[in-house]
Length: 634
Image (cartoon, rainbow, N blue to C red; front, side, top):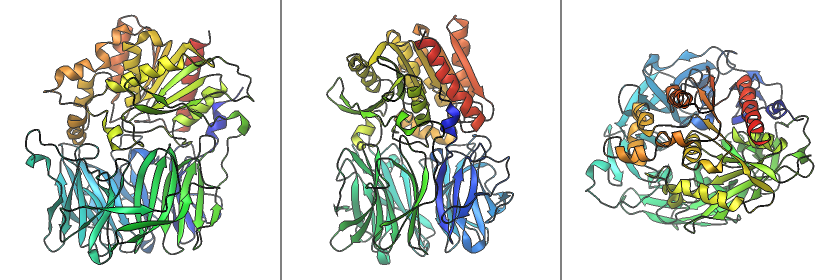
């Protein structure tokens, strides 16, 4: 029988940065995430942090987890305490050492995010969340001197999105809900910010309709003539836009030529490399494509000249992160598939044809033929909307035979997406469940990212509405598949997926024989009240106002229906979670126990809004799997 340790033996290799022929990266080689370095081409990884310090999942951090400032021989690393997400910028020597405070401990009472870094000038840009009030501040930091310059503050982000070459001009973005952005320009000469594009929330008229722009990944063009960026103004699946600083209210489309992929998806990232050369990352049916392109500013055309990822050796998977090393003209990246752990690659040479693998991680003790790549299971929902989904079944080489009991997996977010990503929590679980004889269905219902802005916006102010009905409709279709035994079905999800798990189990109890909630909101009113103050403005708009929308939030809360739950429930929670605090899950568990319902509670003392440490991951995966076996394979 397969053991979860076989999957977890494949260590994570995340966020690689190539500096002076050394590779710096995050890995869980020691059983928790930490920072390491190794020689180009691979060598024994060298730890750079003390063994008692753990890093956070890079996917949960706004911005960078670390950055190597080679000229001053330092690494700036963002540290919290066992998942509490109170990140602090700390410096260590480039060869490793004990973290020391930066900027004279100025950020002691903030939650800080590392946004942009310039290794040439030893400059970083930081976003600082107040822990006392609903306010974010942005700063420019000079590491060589410890100088901090406050740039802006706002309840809505004040995120530093880009800067010009001399750092004399900076683009700052406020974001209200997904796709609703306003741009500001900070100018060193004026020492303040001015509105560049959009209508600030406070200046909008009642019921005024504002076109969503989804402006992101802004870049100054040569000689600061204009700004190029990704936007949904001309394409719901996102494309490129351009504005001249002489007439910033007029945004013009940038034509993109040379696309080689096919399928459903969207432009995911847009990064400046040098002069007029850019990288465009697309998310197509959950898989990553990365192109190098050349921008013609006069003709407003972006010609994609080279495919970096998406064909041949690095394809059919997900790009975890990438970086460009200017000195060697090399791309370094981390990539994984549904059946393949994260690997570090470099893509080199003028034609980008040379691919060098620097790791060879694998699942031990389990033949690759036992692992499932999944099959397309997209469906048309109750209102004719197409919903992307995948169905993972035990492979023919395993001993399991259909019909299989079903595990219905719901991703978090809600504006997230389930992708073929071995580095994420769900994929080892999906594969392990397959090996234990379960079918696993993974939908990306309305509200998921990856399918255009309008699709993602469908969940705003509608948690537990049409997204719930997508799941109900999917179950009605799955019962027609002879390979699946729909009478033995369980639902599981994390975060928003945990919320939806509780919603499905309580509002549609006839569908489920078991449910697993991982740190999901139980009562939307207490969930909102317990959020960090800086997160409340966003949830006020996207979820609902706790005063004006009180009755709506009660109607959409699992708490309202939880007494109807019929199946056994397993609740999993991290003690230090700042997003869905432990009290939220404890309230749920205590109520169900008081009314005589079957509920188990698994709480990790040293985790936050994830389960990252090896011993906890083993316990977590095994607990979920054994719980499902007990309830569905009686």
